[in-house]
Amino acid sequence: MIRKRVPRRDDRIIVDLVKRELFPYTRRSIPDYQWDPLDIRRRLDRNVTFVAAPRRSETAGFISLKPFGQVMAIDMLAVDRSRQGQGWGSRLMEEAERYARGKGCLLMRLLVDETNGRAIGFYIRHGYTLERYIPALKCYVMSKRL
Image (tube, rainbow, N blue to C red):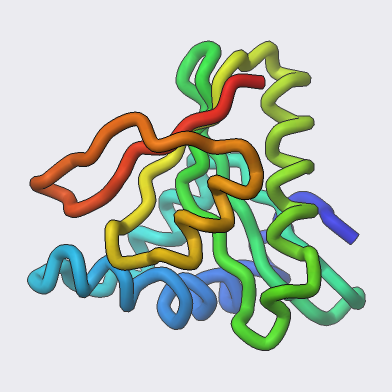
């Protein structure tokens, strides 16, 4: 099941997923970047976040979105390593794109660390294309027309 984030139930798990699944790539690209769980919680509070919940008490992953006019940015997407390859990431992407279309967005956009080859491949398989590279952040901008 894909559902909206419930902060009291989900945030501890989401922050842990960010630390385990996303932060290591950020550190490879920006070695001086400091881990800040409070910043992650603030981002979640500003964004719209969907959670993949195989069972009521379990979280397989999440996607967090931030609208910019007719562009919906994917701020963060992570699936627990033990749940990868089971379709949870694809379901989260489908929900995000459905939500964006419902809000009148015409484009999905995201940043992905250059060292995260698996994520780049995942996004390409879901119809995203590389727009450009940002050397200062060591990441790619990817997008998909809706």
